[in-house]
Image 1 (spheres, rainbow, N blue to C red):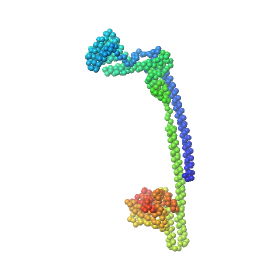
Image 2: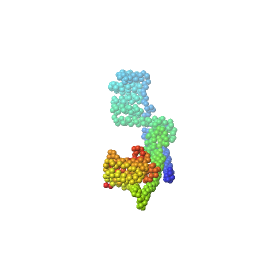
Image 3: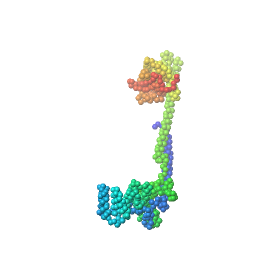
Image 4: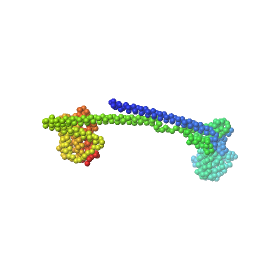
Length: 622
């Protein structure tokens, strides 16, 4: 890096480092402030959740909670014993007690009768076996479960055989017995309704005893046989209520040893339910058995009777969640019920660490890019200033040389020091050559200004190619003669007329020839060969100098750009000729390129023009 570049880059690097440091400090302070605010919000949320959790736990120990619960879920303990409601028949085991015939011979007879009827399809033989079994039982025992079971089987056998007299006779005998067996009473209930469409008096009492499975199956069969809808709804509600109460009582009986003697409210876990107990004394108290979901609803929904004892769901600083497993970061309210504190609002996107890091990197990248582009602009401006300075120096030198020659030659002619006519003719040719060279240089400078301002225009008219080449030869011959160079121009081609700006095209060709003159070998020659190929006219300019390297054949057409040979050979120049020549030809719809010479030595430029006269839309004068 040269000293000038260092003077440009060091301030920019310092600006980048200082800006990055300030940005880091600002973003770090913003992130720390956001994290602190987030931590305060989280702590506040947890404190509020714990306060409300204690309030909810206090609600669970409030005896008034029993008044907001359905009576079917409430139980009582009196004098250390579980209180059984009168309208609910207590059944220690929900499975009905199956009849076991005491004499093994009667059990065998009963099973044989069922097999004859349902497997071997011999109902008559089954009836006879049942009749013989009944004859073996004493007639005076009205509560004998074996006799009632056999009579029920005989009645069903007769009903299926459509022997209705035998059925009614068996039903009559059953009516005189005191039936205690639940299964027998259930069979009698179904047979009475199927045969008489009448429910026996013990129907509701039986439904209070039935477990949910048998009860639902019995009710479905009654409905299928024509039970009225109103009666079916009544029995279904009775069945549900009794089984709900029975479930609560069974749960309370299981926990009874731990409840009796307690003097403080307690919350107990019973498998998938929660038991709340509120003692009134050591031997008495009331309690409820609820599911965790019911406890949750009781706490957040409340009851119109006691709104003060509930907590509004909208005011909870968290969410009540039912879970069989402990929850992380949650507060336990009761077994299986937790309060999960509300999380504080998610921090804004701009306050997250990854976003701040990305923002910092983005700003640094754009700041660095901006500084880089600024430095590039400064360097280009410095280079442009240097280029313009070099350009002015080169132009001054280029103009000074022909002016000095013109002045010297003209003074010698004016003062009469040149007396020989041949010498005078040589001096005049030199004056003409230097004048032409000076004219081309001035015209190039003027054209550069017009092109940069967008003011370049062309006077397009039809011209003969032969006339253009002859004029080119006349203008360039003095320069070639002065340097002892030979210009071989083939003008004897087929007559062609082109639409072009004659002055601009002549200037472009002169620039190409001047470039060849500068770098051709002294005393050498320049060839100008026109040719026609498919509507395109091409003119080949060939010199036999040192040539142009391949990697420079496109660069030499740039403004103010000169080849390596120009920089080492001591040839003066501005670096505008080829740039202006290509620009003029392209404005006319053609082009100018540098190609490999056919025999390897020298340089070859090919100028092309369309024979149709089409231009590239540049401004023209009509």
